[in-house]
Length: 247
Image 1: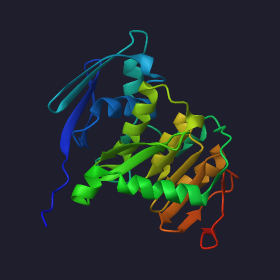
Image 2: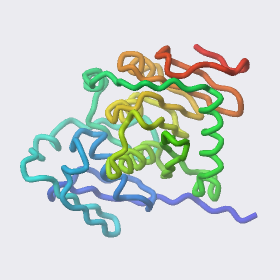
Image 3: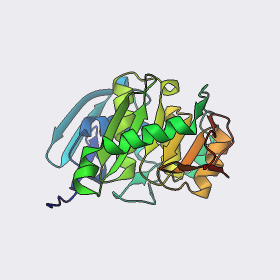
């Protein structure tokens, strides 16, 4: 059987001519990644803040609205994320604690989440071809999935958030699933967008769970087969599986 390797490339992101950072990215859905990343890091508040994006090999150039103070936004302290893809974030734990509480009316079952997690895994072409990619997806209100993949778990989440921004998807309309660990910066991305439920095939960190409880986000981990862990007590996900365990 022929095995394909996952691909990653260094991409420099420039905002109004100023280099923000260089990222390891998979060369797919880069415009969506750009919108999602800049929003997740507090550089923009909406898709309308971006006036132009130009993507050439190894470089993304973004022009923002003239009234935005780019120097102030870009002058904040960067923090390396705990994961793959050479991620960086401008938000500390204390910054995230200042986010607005997430207000959604989700009330869904573990059976439904696990079914969608299975559909997500089956419909991830890059992972199925290489066995070495991360993915993120929105579960839409009608049950359809919007899936994005990347070498980095943070990048995949930024891509699907970027899709939401570009297409005017409201946070109360979606649930976020990810293949990667839910760390505090992953939780901050979903909370900043306003997503009330995030699920993963692997673990959540203690810091992410603390933030989720404070901000009103439900976190479900280890979504595999008919097993899962519900880390939080937000009453947005109910356990209808005898085999599932809540902690």
